[in-house]
Image (cartoon, rainbow, N blue to C red; front, side, top):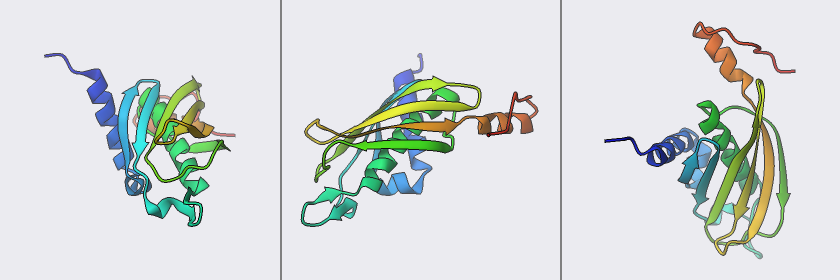
Length: 157
């Protein structure tokens, strides 16, 4: 019986998510995955609130979701999560109570850095935040070199 690559990718994505205590605390769940993209959900919780009167979700939560989704898109492409070098977030509207859904895709993977973008949608499908992350894939080369596989570079400048 052939392996269901979509199921395997979603299971692998969920395993990456579950390795991170912060993402587990947020309740992040893998919905879909390909070698270059991910879709995940986060069940809204009262702990996300930054302003009780408005019931708005803290921007740090949204930034964390953008970072995680973009990193995991890169991770499925390169084999494991990698460190964030730079992160840019745009907040488009207030995220109020309701589950959130994030989509991310790889833009470019180079020898040392990878770039991915992510978008977060509210429970009613409205775009609430988006962003782009740059991730250090040179760490993978350093690990390969330790395992006896020569690396082109292990330096990040």
